[in-house]
Length: 267
Image (cartoon, rainbow, N blue to C red; front, side):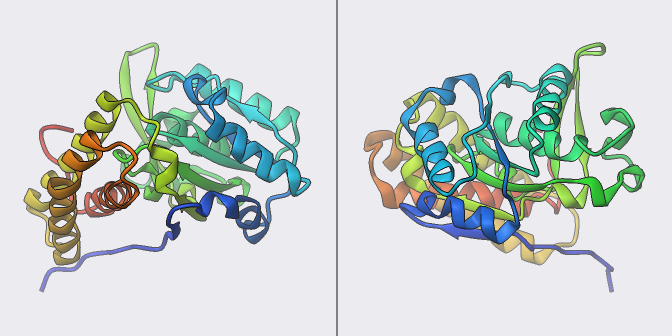
């Protein structure tokens, strides 16, 4: 009999309008001075302003960091850590697509570490080098439906010196709470809707085809593929179709959960 380790611990608050629970999610996580991390394209949009208004009205401030590249680099993370420390923040709200989510997770992770981020690459047991108690809490609020970073224990960052993308892993950079509100995805341009949707499809397809023994992930991947097949055309044709947007958010999270079974040549 094959031995395997399976993990599905993320708490997800799913549904239209759930962004209204952001302040309560902060309270549930113990956050009193959160830093909202997003990207420049989202920072000035109404959905980011709405999130800031919600936490501000609860007395949690409205601090925001948005110096995040489309493919986050170490300089983005370092600047974010500096902002985190300067504001004496106690946690991160990672708000946006995969880049903002990954950068937010890395800021929360690295704010309490003394070693370079590259020492925590997803190689063997390198993650055990980290001071786990110094990792700040993370709330993830995805605004796209593709990467599934909101349910992942890793983040991708580019090493500018070598021009290589590296995966940084630690179990505690898994967000404590995810707010998956499909209303936040309706403003995506069509090309981002399709591109992120195909990313979700690729995750599900590669996970299903991976040779590792993981029947739970196989089932999740198959259902994710079905959801993409039935709903990606719908959200392209009718961007404000909330039900289809919700199914795509589910498929994105399912793809990222499923790929603990493995990925393939696309990634």
